[in-house]
Image (cartoon, rainbow, N blue to C red; front, side):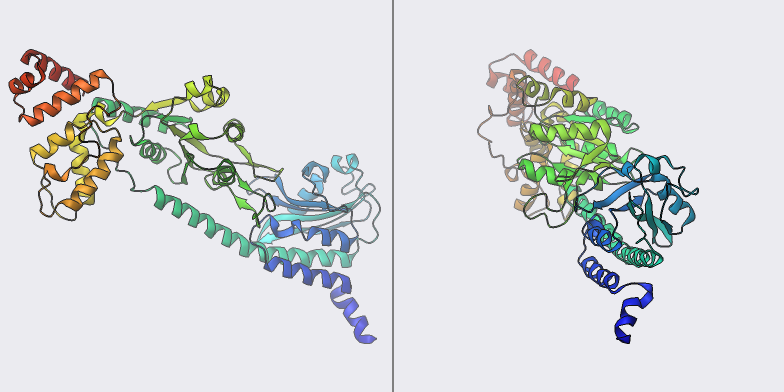
Length: 495
C-alpha cells in the first residue's frame, strides 16, 4: 500500500500523468518530422490535464509572432486559428521565460486585461516555455472556458516534464532535419552543376543576353527564360542567381516536363502526413527548402492548370500550403522559369493561365539558338574539348568547318554530346572530321530553320567542301560569286 502511494505521488504527479509521459516519450522516439512532434500527443495532454484545448506553438526567431505547430480540442480536432488562443498570455510566458498557472483569468488583474481572454471567455490557463539550446523556442499552452481547479501545481509539473521531453526531441529532430535539407541541397547541386557548359560566347546575340542577365540579377524580379531546347536556359538561371544578392543561399532547379501532376505538386509544395497513401511523415517541398534563395522551374509550359493556380499563389503572396494541410507557410524565394514553348499561344488555347503568364513574363530573356551565333562555335568547341579531353587535342580547320556549317537543331547540348562522342572515337591528339558524327548528316533539310537559315547552312557546307573557294562553291550552287560574297557579308554582320 505504501509503495502504491509512493508511486502515485512520485514527483508530485499522479500515476496517470507518469504513464502519459512514458507513452509520450515512446512516441517521440519515432518522430522524424518536426510538425509531428505534438500533433498526436496533445490529445494525451488534454486528457491528463482535463483541459478543453491544448496548443503547441513556435516563436518566429527575432519576432513577436507565433506559428501553430499543432493545436487540439477534446473532440480530437485540429485548431488552425492561432487567434483563438490568448496571444497576451503567450507573450507573457515568452517575456518572463517562466511557466504560468491561472485558475480564473477573467478576474486575475495580471491577465484579465488581455482582449483575447475576454473575447474567447477563457477562464483557466496553464502554460510553459519550450527551450532549445538555451533559448525559448515556443510555448505549450492548455486552457478552458470553465474554472478548472484541476489545473494544479502537479499539472504544472506534468507540463514542465512534457516541455523537457519536447525540447530533447526538438533538438534531435532539428539537427536531423537540417542535415536532410543540406543533403537535399547538395544532391540538387550535384544534379545541376557541370551538366551543361558555362555560358561561352562573344557574338552579338550572346552579348545582348548577358547584358540582360546582369541587369535583372540585381533585382528580385521574376524572370522567364525563352529559347529552344539546349540553348543553356538552366545555365542562364544559375548565372542570374550567382550574380544576385541571394548568391549565398540555395539554388534549386526542378524540371517540370513529363512528371505526373501529383508527384510534381508533392515535390514543389511538400505534403502533410496522411495526405495520400505512402505519406507516412510530413515532407518539406522544394519551395520551402529554397526559401531565401532562387527556385528555377524548367519547362514551365508543361505544368497542369491545377498546379499553375498554386504557383500563382506563391508568386503573388510568397506562401504555400502543403498537400493535405490547411496551414499557410510563408516562403521567400526568387522564381525563374524557362520554356521552349510559346506560352502566349498556350494561353490562347486555354492551356496556360493568362494571369500566371503575366506574372512570369515580368522580364523575359530569349537565348539564341546556336545556328544564330555561329561565330561562337569555335569558342564553345575549344571550351568543351578542354573540359572533357584528358590530353591536348588539336582541331584542324576542316574539323572546325564541319562543326561551323552544321545546323545544330539540338543547340549547345547537341554540340557537347557530339564532341564527347568524338573524343571517345579519337585515338590520337588530332580531332578529325570523321570523328564528328551527326545523326542527320545526310538530311540537311531537317534543321528546323527558315529559308534564310537554309541558304546560310547550304552555302557554308559547300564552302567547306571546296576549301573556301568561292568561285567553285558558287558554281556548284548555280549562283554568282557576287551572291556568295553578299551572303557571306550578311552572315558576318548578323554574327
